[in-house]
Amino acid sequence: MQHYRLGEEWLESCLAEKDLGFWAPHYKRDIEGLEHVQRRATKLVKGLEHKSDEERLRELGLFSLEKRRLRGDLIALYNYLKGGCREVGVGLFSQVTSDRTRGNGLKLRQGRFRLDIRKFYFTERAVKHWNRLPREVVESPSLEVFKRRLDEVLRDMV
Image 1 (tube, rainbow, N blue to C red):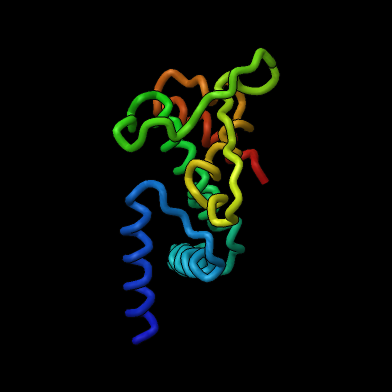
Image 2: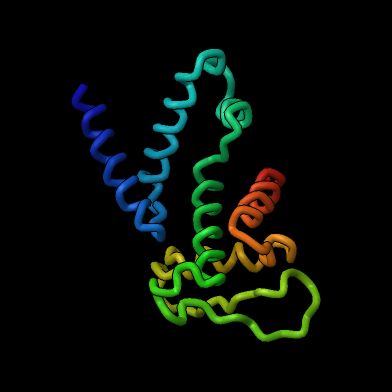
């Protein structure tokens, strides 16, 4: 029973940090802990107990935790770029000025960094994926349209 109490406290601290918007686990033990909780929770659904993790998630209409973190990062970035989160920080992202017609028209500059820890910053991990999104996703007229189009792209990802 003590193991579960510690797990609940750990999960509560992870969820509290997640609510800050820019937190994402990058330590293997944190990722595995969250995935373990998700596996246990999806096994509680009647009729899904003996199916694989992927089948349970598909039937429940859920993404893997990795895709959910990516989705959250991209939604936060969309909000920032559309003016919804300007008070969080000024100049976090700079747009690439290019006349290239390939890809989306809102490509962002990726920073160069010396320290390995910077690759886990929101500004670095989100830009890499943002630049790969199709034009129709990044140029969505509203947040709801963006989420719907993003979900379609994420479903097609392996």
